[in-house]
Amino acid sequence: MTNPNSDCPVCPDAMKPGSPNRRRNTSLLIQRELSDGRTSNIIIDAGKFFYESAMNWFPKYGVRTMDALVITHAHADAVGGFDDLRDWTNNAQETLPIYLRETDLDSVESLFYYLVDRSKQTGGGGVAKLNFETIDANPFDVDALTFTPLPVEHGKNQECFGFRFGPVSYISDASGISEETAKLIEGSDLLVLDALRPARTHGTHFTVEQAIEQARRFGIKRNLLVDATHDIDHVPVNHELSKLKEIENLDIQYAHDGMSIEVDL
Ligand SMILES: [Zn+2]
Ligand SMILES: [Zn+2]
Image (cartoon, rainbow, N blue to C red; front, side):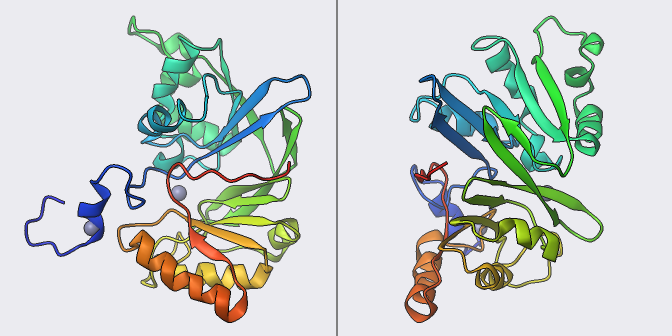
């Protein structure tokens, strides 16, 4: 965007308000009404742009408080926004449960030592009051919704979690899916899948071509792609992808920030 000689059509478009090419870090809000009438807001991942995303979408979707945060892995695009959680725990709610793996808690502790060990805080501003709940590959319940972890490869020798809840399988960061995890995904109605950019070696994320292959492998009714770089021009790329629906009945499209989908949980 600062290169006068750039001919990228996507970046200047991303500057326009409301452009689907304007992408913050991948994240999901699961909003549902509980049997006692209360609305539950569970968020997956709070990355570097969490604050900006929250300002954009929380008022629109009536989110005042967060009931829990579920973390896929400890990269900056999934946990980089932890410091900003103070604006919730210090103003809107008492505390916030965060579900994450032990190894991710270790990484979070080295990034934000004062958030994990609150005795180490030195400033007077008050830091976020977070309750860390460690998870492993076993299913766990949040607000009576069962999350089944989907361990996936995210680069060589690195594992990341996706999550299955109800008919939804959410995999924001992946470069490979084992047969074991594939069995947990089977029978989903909606697959959210990492698709960084068109084929070019990457190694830690699926390319668009690989994501299409995965979608074919599972044969799920609806597939939404996330985590795109500026190589993906939202509208024309989705137009191309829509041809797969006509040719082989494969419903696969890039998602966009603020997108809302109704599912039966
Ligand atoms: Zn660009
Ligand atoms: Zn990552």
